[in-house]
Image (tube, rainbow, N blue to C red; front, side, top):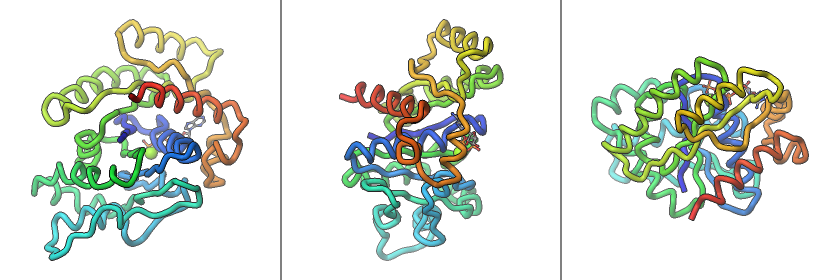
Length: 255
Ligand SMILES: Nc1ncnc2c1ncn2[C@@H]1O[C@H](COP(=O)(O)OP(=O)(O)OP(=O)(O)O)[C@@H](O)[C@H]1O
Ligand SMILES: [Mg+2]
């Protein structure tokens, strides 16, 4: 199962949620991979596994340089400190090769690599940049499920309609396997009026808001700083438990 976390809006929780769901999946015994497709490399930093060599840019570079023997994608995946959890690290160099990959029509290459990786990993979580660029489009073409985090403010609501339409187009044109698995309400404040109003509006518009909301907590930042997913840093914390419920809800929907 390949899931991509995507929202063009920045700072909504894509990296935090990708890493935490992956960590839970790994802790539950599933061989899990995080792919960091963002030049910011936040998911790689979070897992304390930045890699100057054999990262995602090195994998993509193989598609635009001549190689007698192309190395399989598995050779770019590295173990993390957490059992069952591997990382294909991000790289700032992705930005340098993006236009060449695009002009040489390499948009389906990630999908090919993913086909190789699904033989080794039961769950793959892809973290994307806050843009519909070459890499996030590649991820949407290669994935089976798309999760859309939102931060429950009015701007994210505006963007969400366009985003869902765009994903629907990608499904129609390039990837019939792609499903929007749900919208994740993140940094949710139960006592504030606006988030509840926004979620009600989205539900009325038939947008698939998942019924587990992730609250706002400083624990998330602490977890980034400690470079430890919440399930390891603070398993009993409310936010860890919400992430666990979200994970189990999603897994419950997998046939
Ligand atoms: N539930 C939460 N409670 C508190 N802080 C959170 C929560 N989720 C995310 N954050 C914080 O919000 C910031 C943005 O989160 P994150 O980096 O995961 O978002 P992103 O969508 O990946 O951002 P970008 O678009 O820049 O890649 C981070 O500082 C993170 O610690
Ligand atoms: Mg991010």
